[in-house]
Image 1 (tube, helix red, strand yellow):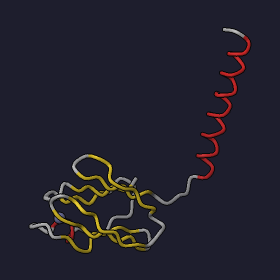
Image 2 (image 1 turned 180 degrees about the vertical axis):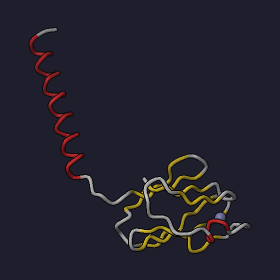
Image 3 (image 1 turned 120 degrees about the horizontal axis):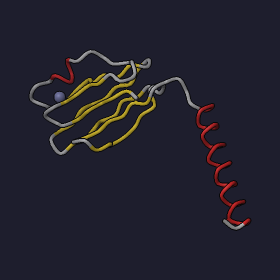
Image 4 (image 1 turned 90 degrees about the horizontal axis):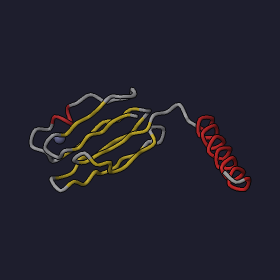
Length: 108
Ligand SMILES: [Zn+2]
């Protein structure tokens, strides 16, 4: 390896390291709400921000509510309504699933 290449490589390495540390320091304790439709990630939400969001799928809609660090589906037009009846989730790894709409709401 030439000296110039070596320096370039080192700079990249340092930058990558700095980025990782920065990312780690700025990481907030609150989890991320990840919504996927049919296995593909659709949107991510901040669990610390209270909001309503309508998830529009080809099969229908689910209204997601984020409040006080918990997530619930308040309304949906799916036939089984299981996602609406599900208790709110607030811990990492918990899920709300709407099978008819192929929607998975996961806390990461
Ligand atoms: Zn549902």
